[in-house]
Amino acid sequence: MKILVIGSGGREHTLCWKIKQSPKVEQVYCAPGNAGTALVAENLGIAATDIAKLAEFAERNKIDMTVVGPEAPLVEGIVDEFEKRGLRVFGPSRKAAYLEGSKIFSKNIMKKYNVPTADFKVFTESADAIEYIEQKGAPLVVKADGLAAGKGVFVAKNTEEAIDAVKTILDDEVFGEAGSQIIIEDCLMGEEASILAFTDGKTIIPMASSQDHKRVNDNDEGPNTGGMGAYSPAPVVTDALMKKINDEILIPTIKGMEKEGVPYKGVLYCGVMVTKDGPSVLEFNVRFGDPETQVILPRMKTDIVDLFDAVIDGKLKDKKIDWENKDCVCVVMASGGYPGKYEKGIEIKGLEAAAKLKDTVVFHAGTALDGEKIVTSGGRVLGVTALGKGIKAAIDAAYAAVSKISFEGAHYRKDIGKRALNR
Ligand code: AMP
Ligand code: GLY
Image (tube, rainbow, N blue to C red; front, side, top):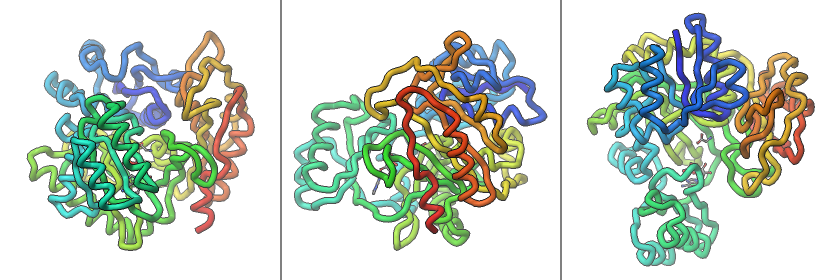
């Protein structure tokens, strides 16, 4: 088979790496990819959102299956366009992708089908939103309705912060059209976990649990990032909790989407807050998580291409997923200054030494080739990932690999996996 993966981050390197292990696969392409995907796939000079060019490439080169990494092309309808042309593609349709593309749509689905989530209200006028905040009091969470590259959520500890967030989104229009409507929701307390599940619209198969580390500094301090590391499994997700998440969140959401006439297929990513009253949905994403994918796929023993095929063909009920009985930890090495301003083009050293370590893979996120050299080209540069027997061994192995790698200005969290260790 010839498979095309769309995207250019750590998630896509991990997808290419896992797909390449399938005995059915001869060739993987990645559009546009990075220096890491170039090791396992052929990179294409086509942007992830250039749907017409991607479809033309898939037709011309007889691509057997396309796997979409990021949300933007999904929300723009890449799956609808590929299907219209008779091309096999893994991901939800444009309308189904609104579960991530519009927080209002997603909240309304949850409300209608009794899926636990924080109470919320929708606003389009800042004066109304501010009146609501003053009456309700903090803490509150203010969210832009549309896609904002992970930057559209403001967790406000006091009313001033909440009002500032409203003004930033509705008055200053920093997210443009994506911020023409907002939601203000109650602030949930607890520990977060990520649950990703395959679904063909009828059957749902959850993957192993994981936990992301969103803040830039140790002990969850500093600004939010795209994710500074992850581990799997997340011990907060016990078997009993997983059953609850399946029964109360995944099943009613997928059934609800079918009833709405927008059947959902692909991966559903559910960000959960484990509160004292049970699991509550923070957000849905319509794709694999980043960096969750980096710790889930190395534990997956099953051929992922078989799972993609089963989802596309509506035959997931015949499948099961086998998991490696090891823990996996991914430590993200970021550019100096990230998540603020940072330089690009800095040489990365020590990648070969790290790659020689047992049970270790260095997934590339923001990297590029500069002649023979591999250089930085983004904020999150590498996802240094290792498996181990038990969380302690996995943490030690990941940091042992990190210690081999260097680039000027590099920073990373020193406490990835600590929460699991403390349990
Ligand atoms: P989202 O992109 O909606 O997942 O939000 C990003 C982050 O904001 C989440 O991972 C949580 O840490 C936080 N967050 C979002 N919604 C809430 C909420 N209702 N209560 C508390 N924290 C939240
Ligand atoms: N790790 C969060 C996300 O993929 O959106």
